Length: 320
Ligand SMILES: Nc1nc2c(c(=O)[nH]1)N[C@H]1C(S)=C(S)[C@@H](COP(=O)(O)O)O[C@H]1N2
Ligand SMILES: [Mo]
Image 1 (cartoon, rainbow, N blue to C red):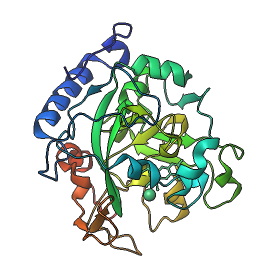
Image 2: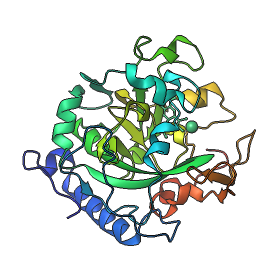
Image 3: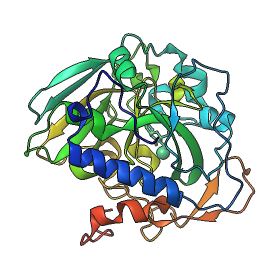
Image 4: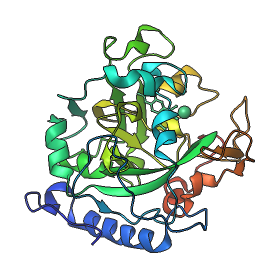
């Protein structure tokens, strides 16, 4: 029920048997445990498409976060960060219509045996039956629950056969000042770049999202393809990806490079490590209003049971 491979892609083509079994066990356990539960609120009904975009057919429910109630569609798609379209939270919804997401190609290169590229239509086609709904919390001073449509990033990465030299994965967003007018200003260095350590990238909770609320991603949320790393601060979840590179060295990332004392490479959600200019101990839940009291931030955004082992033995104050 949780994993169904499309008949035209053998499981072994995507991932080896051991990883496949491990993931299946993980998903089952996660579904049972209600990964990400912080509320004991009503079990959310199956996410209904918002009727605003192109519906994605045949998606299944991963069961992950089934106990979380998604933040309203209007907030998820109206309160965004996407500096390529302006620095205000409502700018992306207003401006991102200039982005053309077809055709779209993602290049995969670096330390792998079969570098190549994949068109978005092929990518959507081959993963349609793999795609699932994942209700995940994301946080960065404010917090939302988003019912993503997506699949584990690792499923795609395996296809390109990363070598043993691949220690990190780097991501880049499109650069096109016509389509992304915010790039005419040097508010950040373009392209927007992000990176993960290989084991973080292969973790089953690290997703490539292609949709939300049962529909293809709205442009302002990072169409046609964006990263989702629920235990890290929001800026790690890079939008509108055109390049994925395996690398030996730790890749430079946008915010880390911009202000290394304020943003680290790891950027795991950690209430004990404050941003130099603000506390990270509490967060505002979007949808509750500006004046509602804040909620305590959880270590790894509440996904510690799933991801803490990735960092055992590391000083998370140093590697923040
Ligand atoms: N390319 C790109 N990706 C990006 C950003 C951006 O400015 N450009 N902003 C990041 C930040 S700071 C956050 S909080 C999340 C916001 O995702 P959302 O708008 O879907 O909630 O996207 C991240 N991904
Ligand atoms: Mo952010």
